[in-house]
Length: 181
Image (cartoon, rainbow, N blue to C red):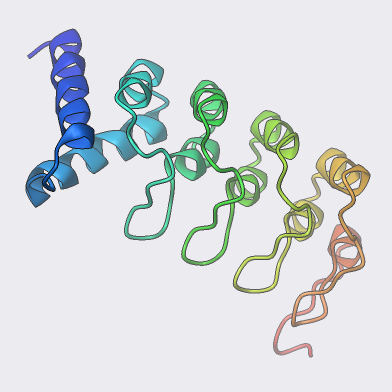
């Protein structure tokens, strides 16, 4: 089956599932989710557009709580990030560990994507499950431009995680670990 036929088939399946009165077969739903998250991971914009056109829920999460936006950001797929954001994907949504797409982009060094995610309405001091903020990630990985941009957005560079790490301390190479506490 060629790519165009596969996309047409997927578009039809997704459209039928969103309009169906009864839930679709679990195997079909699982396969669609797989295609959706894989398209985000690979930056397959035409495939993602097919899901958007079929009104697939863009903020769906996989078993780790990753959304398509988190996966696209983490894997450096700027065009996919743009498409998802333009169509209503929630940049503030967190995975099971509380990490956001912005945190993933900073971690991976995807600076253009991180800059784009900074333009969303998310709280710059949003914390993950470990009490860390995006600014702490930027400080830890010496992403000085992002740290300045986060501060300009109102991020508190003195806010501390449970170990006493702050973005300002991390940017200066001062890392507190459980043993150092």
